[in-house]
Length: 183
Image (tube, rainbow, N blue to C red; front, side):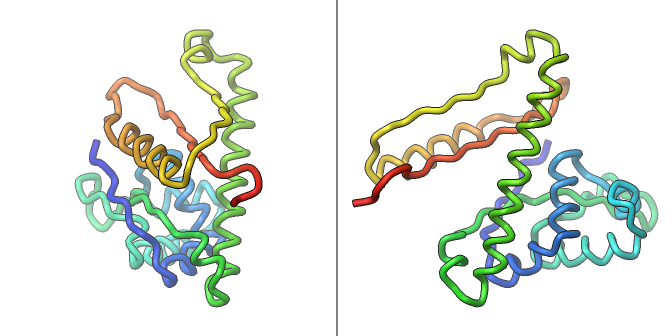
């Protein structure tokens, strides 16, 4: 599997991404893998003109990329490209604050939905998969430098994993943030 390129969002890409249809299309590409405008239109119950337009907008900002090896004729396949963002910077800028809030709310909604779905599906999942899954919560006392190091090391670890051809899709959430007064 091709490793995703991770793009740093700029203000224009952030504003383009936070349109509700675009966020949903991106989420579907992340969740289900590469797809065409027609496939995505069926999933969100829209016409292909709508999905094609929004996919082009996402591509314009580098948030999704074409998968030419899947294309047949005029058919265009797309996949999520991955991105990161300095949400604090965007939240502090009046020009991007609203879009940053939409992005954060979308991320929280998506994480909650994914965890809730696993809680439900886990009730009937094979025991081996339930045992293999993990939900870890720790309270640590770290300096800013050590917190940044933790984030870098976890990212490096995740980047070192390639997809197994016979594996199932796995979602990894990682959040690390201060939980008390900051001195």
